[in-house]
Amino acid sequence: MSVGTVYYPAWVTPLRLIFCHVLLTITCAVALALEQSILQWSYHILWVTIIRTGLGVFHGDKRVTIANNAVFSLFMLVFVQLRWGMTFVMCQTIVVPSIFICILSVHVEQSRESELRATLEAKASKELETSVEAVLATICDAVVLLSSSFRLLRPSPHLAGMLLGSSYSAVFMTGGNFIDLLVESDRDSFLQFMGDPSTHANMLHAHIRDANSSAVNFYHTKYLDLEGQPAHIIGVREDSEENRPQPPPQELQSSLSRQVVDEVWDRAHESRASSNNNNRSTASSISGSSDPMPLVEGFHAMSRCVWVDASSIDLMMVKCTPEFSAWSGPSGLNVGLLNWVAPVDQSFFYEFFHKALYHYVQCAQDGSESVGPGSIVLKLKPPHWGRSIETEAEIAEFCAGRSNSNSNDNNNNEGRTEDSLSEPRILGCVSFKNVRKTRTTQKSSKSSSRTFCCS
Image (cartoon, rainbow, N blue to C red; front, side, top):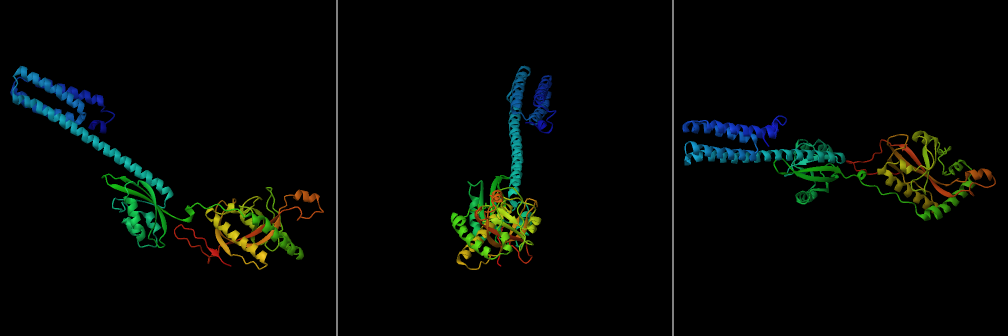
């Protein structure tokens, strides 16, 4: 690799360099052969040696340089022997410069290759650093670069943003020691994690010294910097419940879906038959079609209420009030209310609903008055909204209902009652309200701690 090919690759090609090198070497040999006196020859061979040295350094091809100098030295030895006779001083004058030029050419070529290799490695290392940092930035809240002594190589505004409310936030805007970020109990495990020579890419769970000692995950990889010292890239991601996979809701026990439901149905049917009032509207039906949900009038008409089948795994919506339909948009039957809830809140809402259901069933069996469990704040995203909104959900009541899957047959059998054509179900009435300003959900960092509001 020559200087010319590095800076002028289009004009200075390897073949052109070899041709020029050979041509200039022949020119120098011919010029010395034309000298008539040994004194002039001794004077001009000094300048020829300087020119040959420059050619060897500029060309940078040790093989061509060694070959040219070997042929040149052999030619000069023969010429001097035939013209003036060989002496030890003249032999030394011819051979020593050629050996020096060959050694210098080899050294220069190796140095140039080492420099080029270091440049390419530095460029590859920088590209690797940029790529890893970009990948970590897509999944982490902050990405930091650390030296071998675990000091920040450059400021990290994102990390400082995670530490708002902490005295360490200003330190990480201007650089600092990353060890100071960790709580005392996690420092030893962090040092062991970072010092393990077999650790190239791994994850560590620890706590940072922010206002709440939040739990975080460290994603770590290391590389060599331009000086050959180990450097570290660490992605910091808060370990919140939003990042954890939510367990799938469990189906109701079979004893609840049959024995308990039948018992509650009989009691509710008897009390409803004895009290002829507007509550008869709560005995609506569950349809297996894609028709719009029936609208309920009466006591709950002005509330955002929807009745769901308690025995379905996704809390299938059965009927709703006009206020709920106007608020959430039109929706058909066979749509699960649980599918509208944000994934991070699904398990909490499912557990909250069935806790209220079991409490209702127990009170129905004991004959005592049922007191609701309160309300829960969650994020709901109906399809017609296109976005999620925070709302307060409350279990307003549970009632007995039946499925009218045979509603067409019911029109042709006027003598048969609704109860003889359907299957008993327990319906839960879920009421939605706007989140009150005095009711807040505490969220430190990104950890989603659910707030249950007792009634």
